[in-house]
Length: 247
Image 1: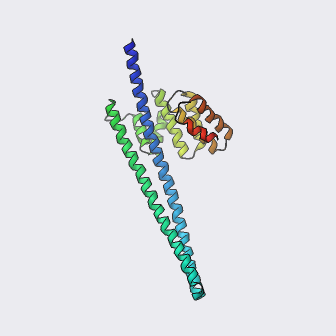
Image 2 (image 1 turned 90 degrees about the vertical axis):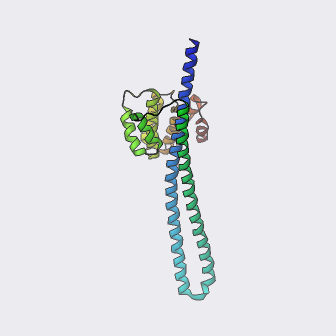
C-alpha cells in the first residue's frame, strides 16, 4: 500500500512538472507575440517621427533658400541636430528588430528544451496529435486565431475534463485578453476560477481576471480578485505581481 502511494506521488509530481514546463513555454509564446506587436507599433511610431523630421528639414531648406545667407548658420546647426535624431531613430529600430529576433530564438530553444525534457520524463509524442494536443501546439506557436477555433471546439467537449478543460478555458481567456476583448476575458477567467479553483492554471487566470477588470474600469472588482489571489494562493508565483497591482 505504501509503495502504491509512493508511486502515485511520483506520477503526480511528474505531471505537475510537465504542467509547469508547458506553462513556461506558453508564457514565452505570449511574451513573444506581445513583444512582436509592441515592436511593430513602436517601429511605426518611429517611422512617423522620422518622416516628420525629414519634412522639417525640407521646410528649413526652403526657408534658407528664401531668406538667404542670414539663416545659413542656424539652419546648418538645426539640420545637423535633426540628422542626428534620425540616425538615433534608425539605431532604435535596429535594436527593436534584434530584441524581437532574440525573443523568437529563445522561444525556439524552449520548444526544443520542452521536447527533450518530455523525452527524459518518458512522454512519447504521438505521430498524430489529438485535437487537444493540436490546439495546445497551435497556441504555443503563437497561432492564436487558429488555436482559438480549436479551443472553442474543446470547450464543450465532455471528454475533456479536469486540468485539460481548465487549460482550454485559461488559453481562451488569454487570447481574449491579448485581442483586447476584456469582457470576454472576464467571462472566461471567472469560469476558470469558479469551476476549477484547484487547477494550476487558476492563479494566473485570476491575475489576468484582475487585469481585465482594470482595463474596463471596474476597479473594485479588480481589487477583490487580486486580493483573492493573494489570499487563496499564497505560494503562487503570481502573488508578487498581484500585490504590485494592489498598490
